[in-house]
Image (spheres, one colour):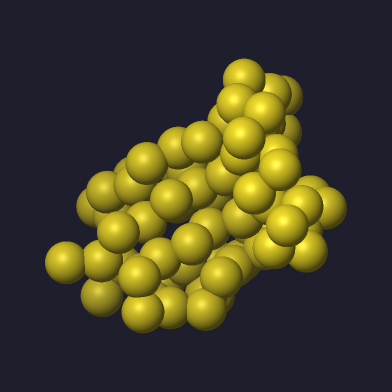
Length: 76
C-alpha cells in the first residue's frame, strides 16, 4: 500500500484544494503542517522545495503545487 504525505501550511488555498481532492478520491494521507512543525520546513528545504503543498507518495514522483492531473494517479 502506498504511503502518502501532504506538506501544508495554514491559510493555504492550494493546500486545502489538494487535501479535498485526495479525500474525495479516497486517498488516505498524513498531513505535516509546516506552520506547526519546524522539522517539516527543514525537510522540505533540504529536498529543494520552497512552497507548499508538496505531496510525497511511495512509488510516485513528488508533486509540488495543486496538480489534479498528477493527484489522479494516486487515486488508482
